[in-house]
Length: 249
Image (cartoon, rainbow, N blue to C red; front, top):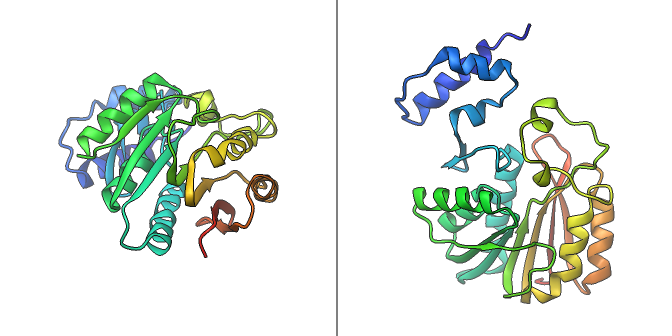
């Protein structure tokens, strides 16, 4: 039988670090852990880029890799758009963690789009609790064309339907936010097919990607965009995890 002491220790440490003084019902927590529920859903929130983000089964649990996407994006925005207020759209915002983090660290107007109404309701709560002004849009990231932006950022579903993943992820996190058709490439392909309808003259596109997807996504980007500079960058585990596309020298 699995030893859950590590998870319980993490729970106590997390509550202490975040100043949360709620009493822990250890019997209930153990029961949920044994049932395979992620500790983040049990706690009800995570720390993401210094912000407390509420999570439930309607949204993905934010990962460290996505924090790195945010960090790299902030650095590149400051490089390519110095001393300039920028417009950003987060496609597939989920909990709102990316949009909130960018809004709190940049001079920007931020739109956050998701097809899930339940996800958007939670994202709105997170924006309010983190004192961030974000415009939320209930729409499809593959066809949205209402406005143009300087920055397009997305961590879309990218897992292949036949790709093995941990049971705790497969059995708890929303399938619509995990899996994508066309070997996990569907959303990148559709976003890039539509990209010129939502980008300003100068733009930066920021993607988190799955393993072994970089070459194909770069080829798709070159098919739909001329005269762009594309970089593929690695995560903390030295795996290709991010793609940045810009037409700014």
